[in-house]
Image 1 (cartoon, one colour):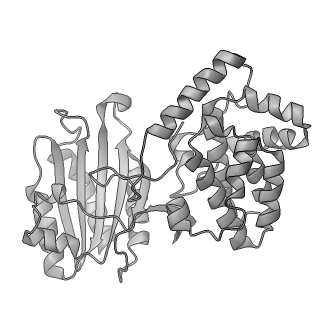
Image 2 (cartoon, rainbow, N blue to C red):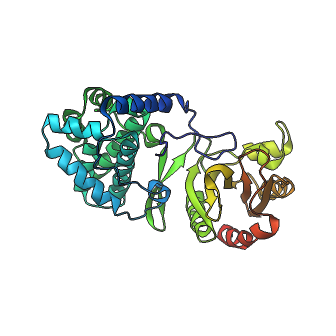
Image 3 (tube, rainbow, N blue to C red):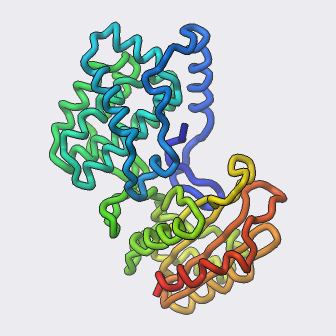
Length: 360
């Protein structure tokens, strides 16, 4: 299961929407336990289906055979009577609901990338299978908003599709969806994404709400860096536009010259990944962060890169690069206290030439 509501940690590892994390999901988990006590663990038609983290990410498109398997279950659900639909919904677990959310989000991206318009209707139907009590309501609304946005972009009858979804949904899910039936979707504010055109087609990057008006195509450069990192031992989990560059990575303090330079970026993109070679990924906290920014001047870009170079320590391996006004800060560390990074300066050096070539 993967949280969908966009969030940001203090080190800039996610997007910049400020949300409460934990309370709603804890309530949903408690509801799932009560549901299991009442209904047991019936055989779910989705129990054997689970998207990988790569398939879950929308910063690039990855084909998945699971899409077709989920669609078969969704189509069967749509053809059932109300009693049968309720029985299927009761058989689904909380994890199954988040599989459906991923299916819906992937279908939204697929139609934005030019897939047949008819592919969006099963995605709307999949939301009717959700038991609202056992998910974070914001995840339902975000998935629905993304589908509505994609539907509007391709000229689909969004209002009718939402109406049909409501007719198939349980009462609380239906009431939640009604609130968005006629709402014009702002992709960034409703979903935490921005649509970006990459060398591989349309992608959806996470977004924060910092200033983002760079002259350079930072989104394209970030995508190229992310794909290069995936070829060099890392799995990229997300790319976030309009992020900030936290001073903690520049060993700077508020009011300092380096703080002014970091705050004066015309745009910043963050890339978050994890090392594939990590032998204990669930508990080690190992991560890779790359911040890509457009500075106010070439001098500022050089100063930011130099500050990153001096910020490396026993707790993190870090270096910086600059090319004209573009600067990049690369950090490999663990978010677990007193856990050293997997890579030292020598091993991480293999990435310098890769990223340097993409900046120039």
